[in-house]
Amino acid sequence: MQTTNSALKHFLLRLTLIITLVSILVSCQLAPSPTQNENTAIEKTAPPLPEIYQTDFLNPLDIPHTYIEPTCRSLRYKWSPFNSKPGTVVMIIMFKNINRGTADLPDSITVGDYLILMEQLEAQGFRAINAERLQAFMERNAPIPPRSVVLVQDGNQTAEYFDKNFGEYFARLNWPVVNGWVSEQNVDETLRLENFEMEYENFVDHQARGITPDVVLRDETAKTVIVRELQGSLTGFADQLGKKPNIIIWPNGGFGIRPIEAARQLKYRIGITQNPRGPIMFNWVPLADEVDPARPELIPEGRIVDPLMTLPAYPAEEALLAIDTARAVGNQAAAYAEANRAAELEYYNIVCADEYGPMPTPP
Image 1 (tube, helix red, strand yellow):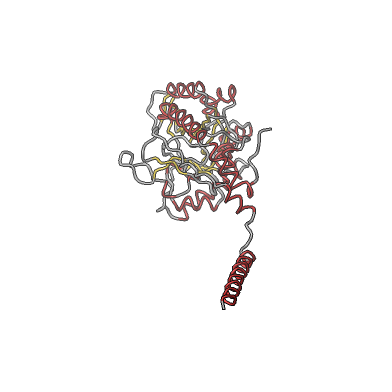
Image 2 (cartoon, one colour):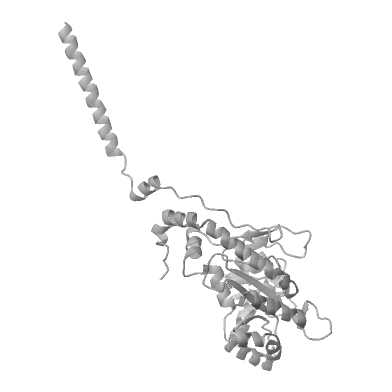
């Protein structure tokens, strides 16, 4: 009887082992084998990305906004050695009138203050760029000078005006001027020919400003007026200057969701406001999400969620004091980027390289 019990125990033990082995084999066959990407993810986890660079140099309500998604594309543009380095900063300065006389002119800067402003821009390492280079920098971080300035002259002006005020800087430093050209239907032919010649010389880079000098485009503006001004600029440029503008300099500082949507449909790529929020950088534009009680005249553009169509600009009268701010923002942003460089490149190599390719290396 004991022999029989012992044999039974051995049989049951062997049966249990067999069932266990069969279960293990079946589970191994059913479970999918990990892919190379899954193995990589198991072996190495991407580090968290840093928050967007913030600064105390600007008004607290002027908050930096980004505009490039997905993250992988922005990182590739940011860290490619063939692009602008992090911390490259742009000031946009809006000139209404440069007053060389004694009479009061609205929104004007005296010639003395203007000369000091231009002297300081040059002395502190700023270099002027045209609209095409601004667009390329903002969209894909194309190379521009580390401290750049866009000199915007608002409204139509004669060759004499441009020569007196900007001619020296174009001749000596090759600094262009961006002009907000009003495509009036009955524009003076002499004025048109002068501006056509300055465009051809790459001295004055004309961009759209509507077709009516006094118009203001807002959300409550009639659709027919919005289309008239934006489409009219495209038609006027083709007829008067033989080019297609990519930038809309919002006439008289007005803009809104509906004008911006219309501008996008008409293939405008950049919009410049008259809101002095601060300097701009690649994928970094200071905008306000709410009305500022201290500056109620400024339209909150952050809620529109299209930073490239609402780039801020300094009025000429405020630009001199803003030079130090722009330099400080650029330096601080460069240091912040360098402190996070290793983590961002590691993230790119783990998450982005398979789809976007390895980060380019210097030649």
